Length: 498
Image 1 (spheres, one colour):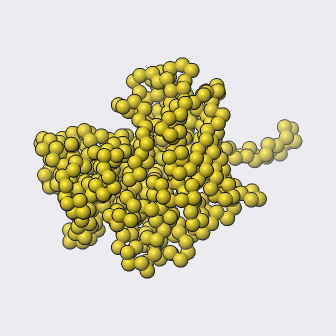
Image 2 (spheres, helix red, strand yellow; image 1 turned 180 degrees about the horizontal axis):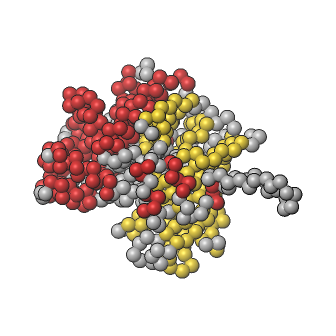
Image 3 (tube, one colour; image 1 turned 90 degrees about the vertical axis):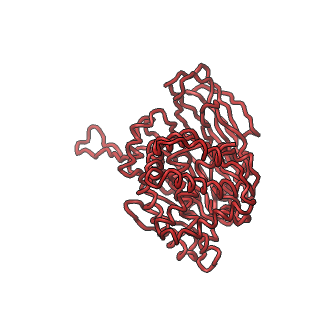
């Protein structure tokens, strides 16, 4: 995600089966039927295969215990109210028994409202507790869940969507005929070395910290509305007044959708990845430029770090107050940046798109605690955006973007504030100046200290060895030291740690 535009400092930004008619009248012929994807077995991951490029399909057999979501979302005619139901298969992958599961109800701190009803744990009624201004739902188990055991949690929920973009950049909002539906389902919290990790996110940074999971989602919406959602479409039906789309997404750290009656699609296919952009018809030229930029970025990052994992990448224009916001396989871009007649938009489009594409590697493929360690995704993604400009235009062609990083740090007088602080310990100016300015310059210094070949090998192994896992500062430093065969305490103490 990016800081606000107002700061002027952000680039961060079924398997089908049919019963055949038999010629004999006995028994009577069965009607043709299509299995409901939401009835997919919890352990059957074949529905996700076609959404992954071949080199990423290994994850389907390796992520034992990953959470699986089956979600239904019913979007009202006014696009500002959603009714939903959710079944979650949660597996205890920890080394200790768990007595509860915790879910984030993010709309309750994003200007909207989420209510949960009919909560069941393994078909038994459960009574939850709430905390963090009703943004945390604590679901008790009737007996401790042993390591390796699973539980199925079911609930109904409703979401009132705010009609303003003022909170957290408008990630959850209905405005200007666009519904941006981020974090609009009960989301399982991460259990890590702190236990169940949950807090109220500061306004400046990202909202979520999530494990890689699998999602099958059915979205019902009014006819005439274009619905764009994370993942690959695996089903579509129409009724008299509504349409229903089913998507499968995973591995992924979140699920996102946007919807508008005004979206027009622009698309290209680049090296096996379908890149689509959705905005209004008057921005078709900007939309074409955007998908071409995204194709270049995917090529650079795939060659340098790891192949882009999905067969699709979608962009949607929204009224967000950030330049762009990253989601798995999907990116929200502020609407005005598509305007090729706006010199300011032209200046920002390429860097914004490259940055947000970079988050598909650092935030999604390699996860991190975005609230406590924002430099592991934002600073690193700013650095690989610089790498994009180097690889695309050469050192000389990258100087303008590198200058923008230095400008951010200059705006706070190049204060030597550590880049490794939690988001909550920065104010708006220092968050931009340190995480988005000084942070990527740390990676430049680390590259120069290690030497280009060792640094390149380190960052490639870092990406591939931590794919679909959660990284930490210690993991990054240890792997860097392995590749340079050196002690990097001095440079990390100078730049990263308090």
